[in-house]
Amino acid sequence: MTRPLVTVKTLIAQTRQRGAVELPDNALVTPAARDWLSGTRVSVRRVHAPPEPAAAPERYFLGDAAQPVVQTLVPGLHRRHAGLKFVPCHGNMAGLLAALRETCAALSAAPERRAVVVVREGASISCVANKYPRVRAAILGQRSDLLMLLRELGVNLLILERERTSLQQMRAAIDSFFTGPCSVAPVIEAALAGLALAAQPGGLEACGCKK
Image (tube, rainbow, N blue to C red; front, side, top):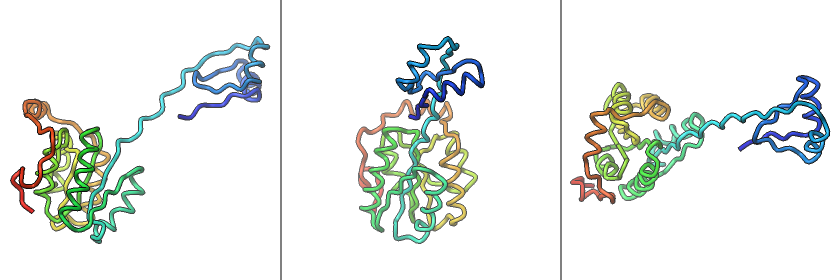
């Protein structure tokens, strides 16, 4: 948190410009400035400091670090989305699931976070991810589906399949997903509230998916 420093020089400059002193309520006032204030009759007005802007929710990107499309996407995503966390996996289901578990645990703790997974085939990923409390995962079929996934289903984990989505489409979908509004339609919210969500994530066999 940034707090303004108030010195004697600051106070004299304000007095000359305004005929009074304004002190933010979170200001750091030097001892010399306090002495100056106590020995002057200049009017002092306390000013409430504006709240600091809330930090953007964390964003995650999962993908096989050896895949050219992932290698191409990561640098640009880092530039456009400050604080993006790249969670790499290494070309096998075990590595992908380990990265997915790490990310889903983070989403469960704070559902306003969002994650994107780029894989060859997304059914198994969706199946496993949706076993986690407060994780809503979905495969993007068409670019036009994205608003529905965000505004009606409140999806916070988006799965992109490499073989059906071009690099340009991926880039546009990820940017929109990371910055777009997210909510759940009331009828869907009511349905979700009535479900008994599993407390622990299931494996591929538990949800009927196979490697």
